[in-house]
Image (tube, rainbow, N blue to C red; front, side):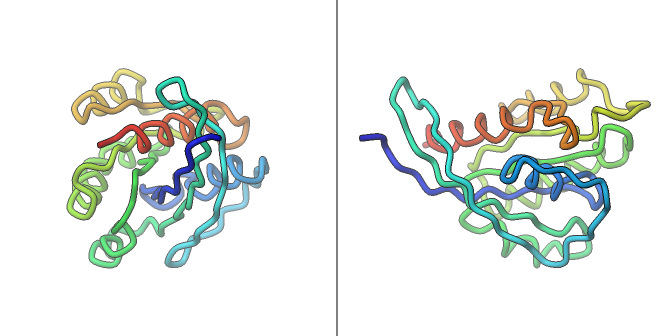
Length: 173
């Protein structure tokens, strides 16, 4: 009988970086390039099977898609409570969204100081890139994390990032 886990995951980052598209790709295997502003938060659920320390586990992810406007830091903090982890998303085409990740990390850490997170640079199917893999890796290393270059359109590294975070949340003490 596999071990069962229930984990809350927050997707964080500036508006327009593709948080909703990443969730839609992961949960429904769909992509739509029409931009829809997230108002407040939306929650979807997906159950995945993973291996944790060599044992089978089933992880139910409660995935919170949180609005990307920074003016709502106190509101954001209430959404983060109880989070098992987060995916911090920037747009690989817009350097400023990467630069803002430090702010997102700091706000997330106030509510969930020990929860693991993974950094994603989304929209890799487009060019020119303004964020380098070395920049992502350096930021991730600073927080004992990892980074992925993703594309919600092609699906590149989307499943891998969610699975990696699921395992990290379940092995995090």
